[in-house]
Length: 480
RNA sequence: GGGAUUGUGGUCUAGCUUGGUAUGAUUCUGCGUUUGGGUCGCAGAGGUCGAGUGUUCGAAUCACUCCAAUCCCA
Image 1 (cartoon, rainbow, N blue to C red):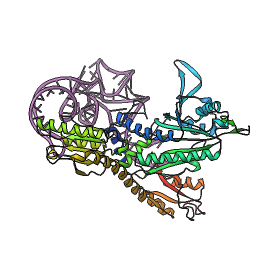
Image 2: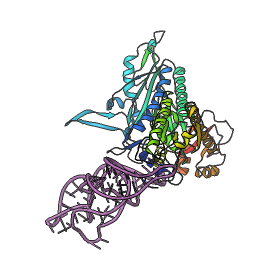
Image 3: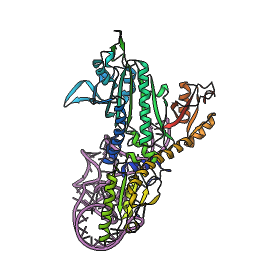
Image 4: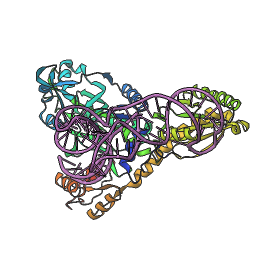
């Protein structure tokens, strides 16, 4: 066996290296010639398309429509909300020239589109009848990442969607924030099979310019938390500087209430880390570009013809049941090579069909996620596979959820906090709500406050750090 | 932001100290062989050594600058 071909890093011992190898060798992405930028290859893009399709459907069902915004934003506009600008400024790419001439008001490559969208919204919204306005944008955003770049997790340009909605009342805007958070949760858990914890970000980590930020946090196998998406309540923080106002039913000019929200291709990074193993990628069936691969096995020309014929029958029957199926009829490769090849790429189900199987009117079905094999009857391939794809999808989530539950531990002593953190745990503890404690903990342990969970048990304990009475539950972990 | 390491056919790699236009494997193409866990043989294709500048008769090799990647720590 040629060891150079597959994944050579151990997921347990060398997680970071393992991750990079999986992304590159499974052909999801490759590096671009510019620092921090990656290129999506068809298998990687296909996963993004699946996420997009599922999310887009849910957004449209809840009354959102898609639009498109340009990539350049003039500095004068980007700087209109001060805090927002200061937050993003350090990582903004600027266009300062067109050809040889200098541009007076330099142009930012959008780090996010609030400012641009809202300056337009102020033109579009006149009356309470124009509300709510719920527009989503599928695009990319650019934020200069100088150090520690990693495919899908930290790149200077990333694919995402950003939704920007405008509402007549605070209640309505806050409902929007939660509705979106739930849509995200459903998508991430049901499509990507990644369990998440929802809640609020602390003041320190909220979106710059927002009133508050809600988040979906997941925990990676190396003990670091990954923010999978955010949904922000903007209050009137943007509607005032951008003049997003309307005449209400009583003919009173009123500032609108706003929400914004987004998920990025970072979801793909999380999926790789949560499900992948020593052989490479493991894909949940719902987002896998190919769900079933058929590998014919034969010893002679005659066998080959028979197997290809039978394999094609299976392929057609699966395809007519909307299964994404491929027949690997490459003649120059042995079955063993193909097994490894498709396992690296994470294809959920492999079907092996050879003379022995035909004789017994069966095929062999191998599952990627738990490395098990079963014989299945040739007469029932289609229904068996359909059930199995469902089952794998669910089981992958159940397994990941179990791991997450085991790795979130409740502690009441700071010493315990530090020990469990070293064990790769996410820490659930009481917190007084003071940023001083949050900062001190970060400084001393490296763990940040990831989320104040919505369903946190309100235990009347004292703050893990200052020992004053704890007002809330918080989850701490190191982060990406 | 700090540190360490690295860049040679598509991929992995030898050569670099002691300058003289590049080693091996794999991949790829063709033919044959083989095929239930990374077959084997023969023939062929493929690089100017990350980019640039300098030193030199001559640079993958020496010097400087830049670009990019990996890992670790804030």
